[in-house]
Every structure is written in C-alpha cells, then in structure tokens.
Length: 421
Length: 159
Ligand code: FES
Ligand SMILES: [Fe+2]
Image (tube, rainbow over all chains, first blue to last red; front, side, top):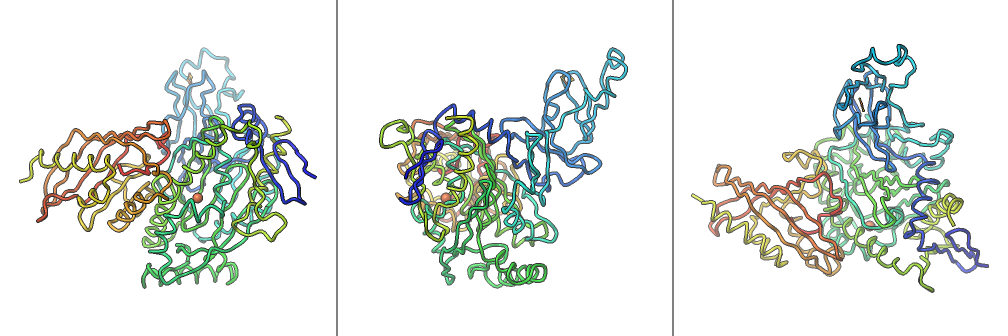
C-alpha cells in the first residue's frame, strides 16, 4: 500500500520511496525549513582551530544570521549576534582577525571580547546602572557546543544536548578527530561559492555513491592515469542511517589518502611518511581502528547541512538556501595539525584534483544539481512530480544505494511537513 | 629586450585562443614546467598552494589533464560549452631576471551559460620566458578581486 505522508510517498512491498519535487521549488517549503529545521537543529558554526589564539575571531553567516565566532581573552569560545545593542550597527566589520575589543564605529561603544560593554561615549547621560543591567552587552546565540573541535550553535534554547543530537554520528566525527593526537586544523583558504539549485540537492549529492561513474567520468579517467596505477582498489562499501536524519557511506576507493593510504605515485618518500602515520594510528587506536581510519573513506552527513567528507582529502562543508533555487556553500580543508609539509602538500593537491569550484569533479556536481533544479520546473505537472529514491530498498545497503538519502528525507519530512503541507 | 607590445600580443593571443576554445593551441603557449594557479578569493595574492587551499594549483601535468578534461563531452559543466570573453588590459612589465619576465595585467572574464552571465575580475601575474620558440608562459596566477565565487559558483573555464 502506497502511503503519502507530507512530501514522501512510500510503499515497502513495492520498493517505492518518492519525494515530491515541490519540496525543491516552493516558497512555502523554504520558509518552513527555516522555522522547523534551521531554527531548531544544531548548526555547524566553525572549527575551534579557526579561532586558535585568545582574541581570534571570524565572521559567519549561519541560517541568514550575522554572527561573530571568537575566542575571548580568557580563552572561552563565544558566538555573538553581530549587532550593536545601541542602534544596531555591526560591531565586527572584518572577516577575521584578532581583537581584544570590538568597537562599534557608529557612536563608539566598545565591547570586550567576551561581549561586555566596556565604554560608552556620553555615559553620564544614561542612567547610573546602565552597565550593571547588562543591556549594553553583546548577545550570544542561545546555545553553543564544541564537539571535539566541531563547533555548533542552536537558535532554540530548549534544544537537546549536542551529544544527544549527534547520537550515532559521533562515532564518525570521532574517526576524524582521532586522526591526530595534536588535533585537527582548518587550512587557510575558504571555498565560498553558490549553486543555483535547492540546498537539499547538495545534501543528497554529498553522500551519493551512485553518481560517480557518469557524473565524474572525467575525474575517474584522470584517477585511472594517476592514483590507480599499480593500485587497483575497487569502490566498495556500505551506507548507514544514523538516526535523527544523520547518515554515512563508508567504502574503499582507488585514490590515495594522506591519512595513511599510500599509492605508488607517491613514491618512496610518501611510503615512509604513510607508514609513519599508520604506525602512530595503530599505537593510539589499535590496528582495526587504525586501518579503518586509514583505508576507508567516509561521507558523513550531520542533519541538516553539515557534510564532512573524509575521502582523498578531508573537507568540511555547509550550505544554506537564500531562495528555493539558490544556495550559498562554504567549504574548508581540515588536516592533522602536526602533519609533515609533504603530507600537507599532497592533501591539498588531492583536494584540488577532486573538490571545490576548480576541481575535476565538483563543477560537474554543480552542473548536475542545477540541471535537476531545471527539471523541477515541471514539478507540478501530472506524472513528473516525484523523485525516485528507492535504490537498495529491502537489500543489504551498499555505498552506492540511497538509504542515506532516505534517512535525511524522513527526518526532513517529519519536521517540515509539521508546519507546511 | 622584450617590449610591452610583444607581451600584449602574447596575452591577446592567449585570450583569443581561450575564447575560441582552441585549448590545445592554448597549451602550446606554455612551457613544459608551467604552473597555473587561482588562489581562493579570501587569500592574499601571494599565498602558497602547498600551505593554503586554492581553487586551482596545477603543475604542467595537471594543466594538460585539465585541457584533456575540458575537451571531453563528459565534462558536463563545460559541455555544452559556455561562451566566454577574456578582456585583458593594464599590462605592465615589472622586471626581468634570469631570462624570465614578470608581467601584471588586469582581467575581466565573462562566462555565459544557461541564461546567466557571470563575471570574473582580477589581476593576472605572469612569469614569461624567452625560448627558442619565442616568448612562452612559465607561470600564470589569476588573482580574483572578488569576495567569493558568488554567484559564479565555479572556475570550470580557464581564466
Ligand atoms: S549603533 Fe553602535 S554605538 Fe550606536
Ligand atoms: Fe559528486
């Protein structure tokens, strides 16, 4: 029996799972997503290494909000709304930097890096306990949490803890955080770009093992000439639902990984380096976990929009819709803090070969997503209103099935269809 | 001594070949040890691709492979091909050392596809080398004077 709930039509016996294409096109859905997803879920704000020293700050746009993420002079991490308590100018006007104070240039109020009001021109013209009332301080977002370096915020003060929210996904973030005893760091250089498509298309695409053979034919041709030489490892693995909408695919692949999956083109120097890193992983985590970290790839989705792809390089990516058919994407490269110059160079090389706006793969993903959005112009016509996301239903989930997408969609639908029909 | 008009001839030829999608001929303008780089928009123009995340940091091998890829019909983002126009101006010779000439120029590259026209604007930093086969490009770095790739979304064409 086919049952339709919100935007999803399902029939287990028929191996059917469909999503209404209006989910990608409607203004009402876009508004409902802010209300029921982005204003309720834990959202990635940045990595602790981006504000490593006391006073470091970065500006962030998260779910449309204008925020400052900093480490104050006492070492505490904060996320403030970037708006002056006086009459609303932005108190932080640089993209990143280091500051003991933020000064609002409009009338000159000055705030400590902990957000407290430090000075106020014409103070004598305000009531005496203005400062004591706290109404001149910067305001922090309702919730902030640091999970092993991955920093999250939540606009809902009643939200559950980050540990509870991440649930089974913690295991996979741990497999990233455990790659270095010295900690992981974000490499300088952000990839900020846009895609003229609905944001959920990038959710699906970021852990879609099915599309590589055709969408990335030219990348795979390149890999065959380089990484694969003398190293013919098959793409093989599993997909997993992790609960709360989180999901992962975990698999072997022919490419080299700078966290200890050596390939012949990296030569003897690379081999020694990879053996050294692998030995360190074994010493810290035992052989099974070390092999898993080194030789398995993982595309991790933390609901709703944090992607951590631990593949030929390590990328962290988040994205928000500005309109149903436009998203802004921000991507970073993450790396072990203490890796050698050799490994860092190969890591970045691997990154650029595949990932990002100039890579041999990502631009074709962007094209595919924009092409889907083009197709959805027919979303309201009879017979062409649904996406089919049924691959692998009723079977052992393979890395190139769609179980991980169904996981996302079920959680998305539970939230969005509660406020939007 | 290489003159500015000789340099301009080379840069204008390069722009023409790119806009005509004659990419194999374009590659002929580059030396065997050529490099082609596009730093991420938030990096300083002199950033090092071994230490910072770029959009593109190709050595000669990968540049060649980029051309191979751009010439395939399975290079979906540029097939069907976009229309481009490379405008090159403000050409300045900055100095010569060991037979290599440093050149800076300003660019605006227009890319049109599927009804959208996006503009990439910035400066080129070239290292040119005098060879027996004439003046060749040893290195090209395209530094974008943009905040981000919004709305451009990608650098799937050659800048
Ligand atoms: S708006 Fe900031 S001091 Fe007036
Ligand atoms: Fe892809």
